Image 1: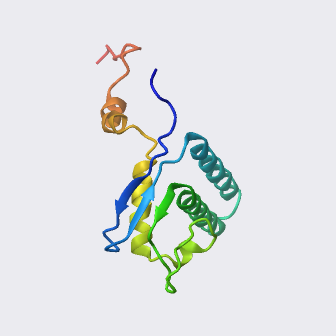
Image 2: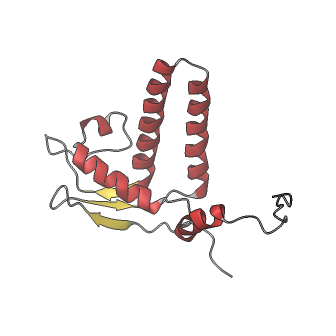
Length: 145
């Protein structure tokens, strides 16, 4: 029978933005993907009930919460340190606030690659499929022209 559980083995990514730096990442299990979606949906619903200025703030909060969640759950190991030589702890609130933006953006891309929810083949065919007329119903033409 085919295995249907998440692969718990980490994938190592050497950081181009920080020579000598690495992160070992694992994909989120489906349950954590659902948790992430649920939290983001709740924040999106809250933003729809507020004025435009507050919607931007809520969107920013949603992005921050999502990245905090992903870094906490996806980073298994790394060799990244703060200014005092202490290993960064991505389980602590505020760690992303001191992370170099280039390093953070690179790790973010790797996490996104691992947790890609759409099937690439479906995305490649999506425009062609959506542009084709439905074969289920006949196309009616005006015969008076």
